[in-house]
Image (cartoon, rainbow, N blue to C red):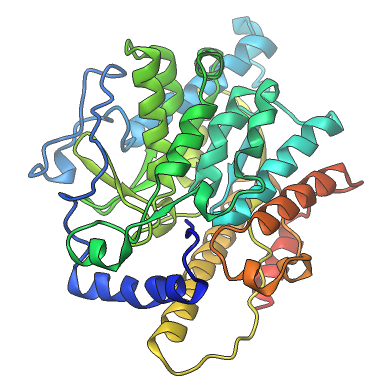
Length: 421
């Protein structure tokens, strides 16, 4: 997601010119040279991803890190309901009265370097003193980088600074023009980011994730399987709790899941997990709760329970589209188009989530980052994919927002802001 110390103009040319060239000419199609290590991450379930030539419809049930079918989501949501029902309605008599089950969901959006806002907001929310323990945490791309830390609990809030004050050398290394044209799967390698993620995952954090899952809570990271073309939700909480692998192996698998959800195609290398080749969640979804809603609804009927669901969205974007002076050349057009496609995907995903919440009877609130144009960073810093100035200021802005009297906006205001453009 970033560039190193080479000149800004040269690296902008790489992103703007070589990315469409790779996509059109399929120069990035080969993963034989420069592909990441493939890990099976077995041990969670006695099932693995189907062979590459197996039709998607023949996959009988969910694999380790991979797609959850309807019954998988129902079982997962059933665990959440059951764990809450055991506390509020432990006897058959109480359950016969259709008890109300409170469910707290946190959804962290995509956002690249803007994901620093989410880290600061969650830390500030803990300091505020009223951050709930979420029954379900979902994360996509930048949100997926922080989701395991948040799910592990407030004791690990110091690691939310993982994306604070970071520059390009903290995230990527360039593969260079020659590397791309001769088989590298992306313009950049992500070794520095992978090291940061791996170092943040300690035995204590892995155990905390496992314990949360055993208590009935769930965490899902989104990723797009380039082989099948479908959006997968990686159920890493169950993996942390039940896998017989060593800590080092589980750490590597969890790191793989984080790198998969944030693998921007063309810019970052895809990540192999078993037979799947995963790329960024944002190819398909920026926020994903539709399957969760279906699973909760069906399980509420089965358990004779009423739902009181509160969804908190952390949106790593200011939801603004600014006019830009565009020269009629490949670099300018490709860069602007790339940014607009990402923006439109996020807007549609947020709007779909608002509609879903209204249809499902959920309460929805959102925190969004401040106007990025108001950050006191230089023009050169603003041109970077990852800027120490921007990531530090957004982290601090998140802390300040969480400390405010009313840090959230409701669905009507959120919809209005999206539809302004």
